[in-house]
Amino acid sequence: MPKDWDNIATRALVGGAASRLSGGKFANGAFTASFNYLLNDLGKHEYKIRSRLCDVGTAGCTLLEQLKIVDRNSTPIVGYAGGPVEGQNDLLGLTGRTNPITHRVDYENFRITNTTLEGHAYNPGTVVHQLSIENETRFEYMNPNTRTVQSIFLTTTGTGVGAYGTLNNIVGVSIFNFTHSMSRHYSEAYIQAQPYLSKSKQ
Image 1: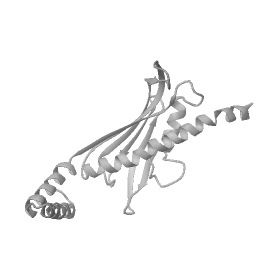
Image 2 (image 1 turned 45 degrees about the vertical axis):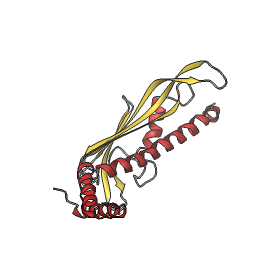
Image 3 (image 1 turned 120 degrees about the horizontal axis):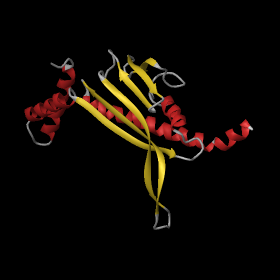
Image 4 (image 1 turned 90 degrees about the vertical axis):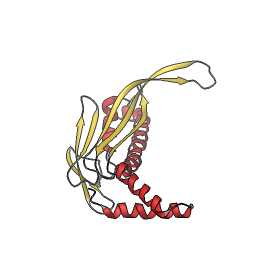
């Protein structure tokens, strides 16, 4: 049985009111909203986000260098500068509570795994950030021909079973879209800085 009956009651009230305003019966709307909550929010969640970071062969665009950039941004609400640390991290919650996770970086497979611990709002759940090199076909501007380019892609997958399944899908995508946005930003900045970094080493 669900623990948060207040959330079910809230959805029933909102669903009933919406149904009444649209000319339907309050009871039907309340039942539908509550049933959807039970099916969705107390079931499994799963989402996936994919982004291209850079083109292989460009200075600074290696799996290892990009992994370090993604790692720094892999938990956007970790709560302190420098990104997460290996092992347990306490993420900031909207209600002031901490949401503990374990953070692991696999340098051989270029993978970052965050797993929720007891006390996390979305426990049990796992988020995996995977880097890969893939071929990408591109069209040239003002040119009918295409070319194939090898690029580094970041794929983030979130999975889990527990309360707030629907909310987790919404929040997870929002949070880790930010991870992708920041990773692309820092990747571009890092690559653009390579000529200056190489000169400073000479």
